[in-house]
Length: 241
Image 1 (spheres, rainbow, N blue to C red):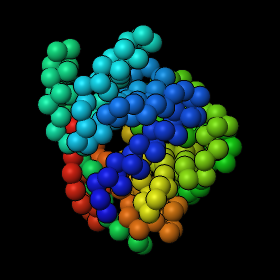
Image 2: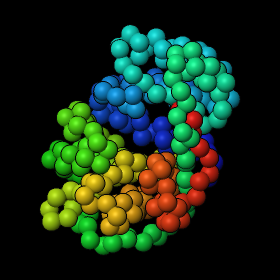
Image 3: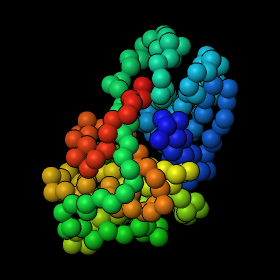
Image 4: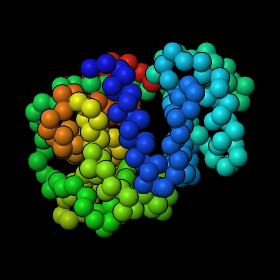
């Protein structure tokens, strides 16, 4: 699978979050500007197109988010001197490279088998999802509250997965079907339930949610990288952000 397909799946994830918020998703010269309009840098993004002149996109994002007083992040799948110079002018250091991993979307071991897994079908399910995600990512669940919306179910290619133990959601993930890929996002496990194989289980649930996908793709934090590699995912490139 090409990196272009991987990058398209990543963008599809962010497009849906913007739709859930009733916010904006703008195709602009040199990139894609996405406003999820939640507190925190990671929720508002500029995704730079490969091989493009990035100066117009960077300036448009500066004006757009500046007018709304929103912090934002930019993603580049290739080196971008323009983006590096832009960040330096604004005193923002580059972050560690963000690995992109692929694997065939074939059978995956469920891992521990201790979780009762399901896919969200109601707003109550979404509230449980966001409560777990908040704990996993150390985000105030109230910050994620606006994502609890009926619009979350508008696109059947986008699904929220839950893993329960004794009735409580302790692990979550999102699957995104786009073209012949399944993207896995938002994988999180409550801190007190880690190191039990739950992350592996809820990742496998997301991959299986799109049975006709040829390739599974995800981006990994340092904490999750070894788990995904043990599941057969391999690093194919790294985003710069």
